Length: 297
Image (cartoon, rainbow, N blue to C red; front, side):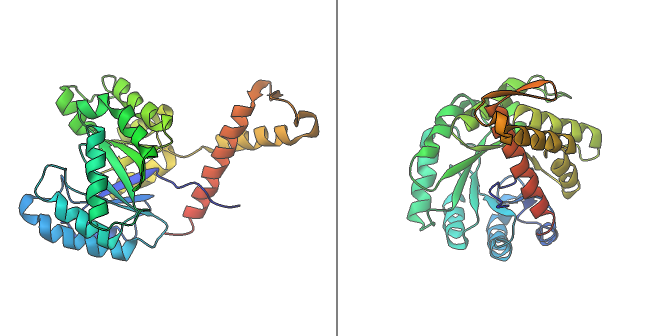
């Protein structure tokens, strides 16, 4: 079976200035490695971290995992050099923080083009400001415009909550409308969307609950701050055994000769439509991708 789904259940931030963390990134089972040049790197370490991340990209980019570099924000003194170096080493994508309007995406695209970045190197946008939230639909819509392709929205929940003066409490009641807004924007234009980080590494139950909530909201995955969170994210943001079994039943039911021309059928006492068949196929596609991922790094 061909694997067409790119898994993004777990996206681990790896500080570009932390040599040990960069070394550990070689073996982490996260679906996405986000090599970070922004928040986790002090101003006086930006240059050396950029060099270390460039070396890491060259070392890691050929594996099955997606290698993404989070550069510094547009209005910082480091962004121009970040983009020039990333255009040279060519990670799978560049993640740009604090994207607040479509003009920000245009500026990044222009800068990457000037730096000679390949057209297939993707662009990811962080939605972490009130302006970014209000313009999320317009930002996502720009994905249809020329390369580099905008393929993923990443929610920066910590920054967003701080600017909104909201509290991130268990259940994230205050944040749910904002999270759902970004998911809707991403889905309207065919983009992936990743949830923000969970800060309390010791709270395994809280983290698991937030992963399940992210999946219930329709997100593809969750950004992580520590390797210990990877296994739980991979488990909770994947179809369960029951979901996979049900997907197989739905597809098998629609392949029966009596159902070939029907748009609505009954499966196990439930009314099932063709949209459920499409959902079932996606579930099995994800399951196949996970099986493939478990055999390769």
